[in-house]
Amino acid sequence: MTGRPAAPPGWQVWTALGLVYVLWGSTYLAIRYVVVTVPPLLGAASRFVLAAAVLATYLVVRRGLPALRATRRQYANAVLVGVLLLLGGNGGVTLAEQQGLPSGLAALLVAVVPLWVVVIRLVMRDRPTRTTLLGVAIGFAGVAVLLGPGARPEHVSVGPAAMIIVSSLLWSIGSFLATRLELPPESLTASIAEMLGGAFGLVVVGLLRSERVDLQAISLSSALGLAYLVVFGSVVAFTAYSWLLGVAPVSKVSTYAYVNPVVAVVLGALFVDERITLTSVVGGGLTLVAVAVVVSEEGRRRRSQQLTVPADAPAQIPDELQGRDLRSAT
Image (cartoon, rainbow, N blue to C red; front, side, top):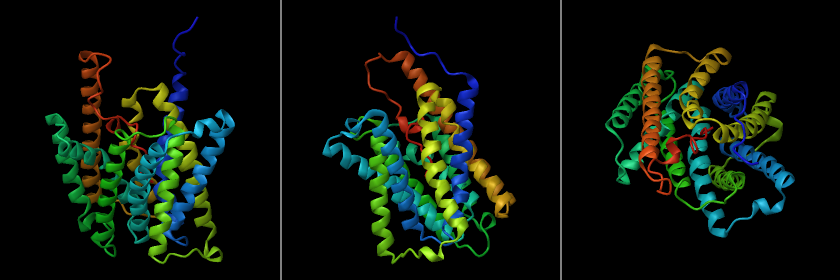
């Protein structure tokens, strides 16, 4: 007899979700430690090369070399997505934190990714609901507050914060394309190609910025931070996230999009004395409420369409707003 596998126990789902909450939320703090003595873009590139090597080894051991098969077009598309996600998204975060932007504030600004996706959908003539548009308006009002001087340390200009906004837009474009381009059929293979493509872009731009790695100058805290990003940020959390997408409702999995920034703010305040100002609380609160509204509304809209649209009809709500491609920009 055959049938659907039994659902895993609730404690397993919440344990995996907790890992995604904490590990992805903590990557912003780890990045802050890394960029103290490691060049930001070359350091990020090394992280993704190492993570790709670990995932590729795991995939080959479990499923053999055929699991890595894909067409040139599929690999090229994955590389393009990786450049947008990791060079455009992660690269901007590392540069901004190197220039003094608090890790908690960086996380709050990255949280607008779902809002940018809605804007992209508008440009592509896929009109969201009024509730979604209201959420987007509230979210960008929160971003405007976060860009003000009250949310930033006095010695940090608006430049690094604006860089995060551009990075989140590039990440959103990458997420949007990831659901529309033909990628390798094995999701781990696609992720490996994305990591390697993004790492290549990070190396090229890093060298153009004259970044150089001085191994003797790397501090222990930076080395440990980089190791943490590779093992826990890119491998453990990603594995937990991928497993969750197969066993838990997307509405539950996608809650990480507005929980991660809260974790990042708390960790930044506890470990590196980042100040939590009234301005940052107001701006961050508006942004996270907006993200929650947008994600929940799009989930509700998708469920409604699944009840009224034939099973063989194409999905109307992009998966990038359902959690599949909202992987943390760090």
